[in-house]
Image (tube, rainbow, N blue to C red; front, top):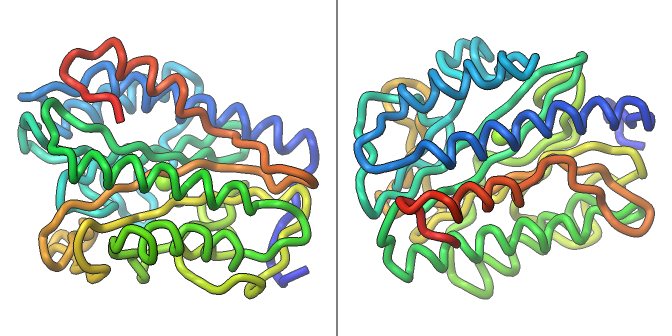
Length: 268
Ligand code: MG
Ligand code: MG
């Protein structure tokens, strides 16, 4: 096995599941709150409280100096957005990334919310990015290689739909550390990269741009924007590599339940 990759026991996977459940519940909670006029700072404050009430610790706060509990990346922001005073508007897309640490393990998942009447081209970007996440997960089977996941995502988003796949940021192993080996790029070649073993836990997270793949980092040192300022989508699941299929540890169904109930959000 590739150096530095940590396989997890059944017990450890159960603990990872607990952390990821809190992540998913937090994202669902955020999905109840998002509406035009609310700020990222308000969402972040409430999410942090929610995480603590559930016995967890926000993984991102303080990570390499990141100031907040959530990453909130709006429209042309790809990832790593710092929650700000900006008031969310009708037609915005809002990517929310959440990490929770509990019992020694990190959960990590992200979802992009569509606020109100988002146009069909952008809705398709969201739908297709989400679809590519599941195509990647389908390849997370023991004996495959990381490149099989990467290629499935790139083929669907870049080759089939002409979107830009961000190169500088990638998925990753997840466990006792928020970012473990191996790196899981959203681009690559079939049959290349580290071999996947049963019990490897990874976060798969396509970051897909409507326009070109190029990005820039804002002066705040964190927020990643598309260079052409076209919108970008981000969906992420933490999963366990399985013998016949992967097991998804995070849960987007409960997020979609809260979207259904929130009249300010459009179902993807
Ligand atoms: Mg994440
Ligand atoms: Mg991640």
